[in-house]
Amino acid sequence: MKIKTSQILLFSILISIAVSGCWTSRSEKQYLLAKSNYDASLAYYREGKTAQAKEEILLALEKYPEFTEAHIQYQLIRSKEVDSKTLLDEYDKLLKQNQSEARFHFLYGRLLSDLEKQEAVYMRALQLDEKSPWGHFGLGWVAFKKSEYEKAVGFFNKAIEFDPENPLFHNNLGGVYYFMGMFEESIAELTLARELDPLYPAPYANLATAYYERGDFDMAVGMLQEYLRLSPAAPDANEIERKLVQLRGK
Figure 1 (cartoon, one colour):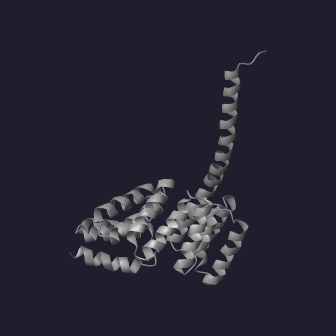
Figure 2: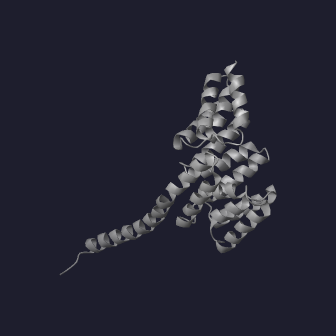
Figure 3: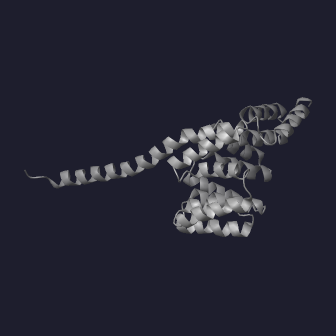
């Protein structure tokens, strides 16, 4: 049977799509398997149930070792158990095992206390992968800590360009806009962060601050109430309660 060139080309395209789909589905499958454990860990942690939170986050990382947000959650939990050097040593070991992975440079860098060293590690992440959203996010955080707000906005926007649905990126961009006195822009970004993940507490607290500065006290009260509802065991819960009493008196 004679096979036409067009049929061969179509067959090649289908094979290419199938192979690509296999790689994508493998990563997505790992993520989906780990996501329920990650979400459970966040829920337990917000309720102050640290042991259960740790158990779930370890399961998430076992299912998807490259799950960056899960590593961030693990670092948060682990920092309550060990000193900073021990945790840094853990991620130094992980970094050595994953030298070509930009995300592991980011995860190591965020544990460093020296901003210049952090910046160098994040730059290395971008040398490995110029489209790494976490590398840009890390540099945005360094710029923010240096009060270089315009640079921070640029880096955070770049992170969003490569990962537009990450609520953490929008939350931090909204925070920078707040410090720049750009309250409308801040509220827009923080609202988007809240919409992308309605269970993420930080944007609610930040929105409360932005609404307060705008003189919208009722909205500020509503955001603080939602923050406490989502994160009743938050370290600043008592402070938030005091702020609510003050705002209700206005």
